Length: 81
Image (cartoon, rainbow, N blue to C red; front, side, top):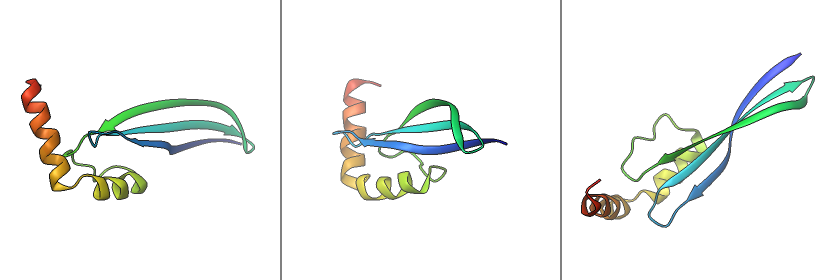
């Protein structure tokens, strides 16, 4: 039996409060992984993270304080991004 398993396997918090999230998609046959691939995305302070994995949401709630969001937005504004 083939099974597709998607999981968040790595969450990194950067100094500026951005979170790098790596998602692993594994294909298993009879419980044995036969293939996998990875996808990365970033959740920046102030981004809507309500659709993220529960672990990512919990870390965002702790890390993305109003002060971190304000500092990040000021830095982005100063860079003209």
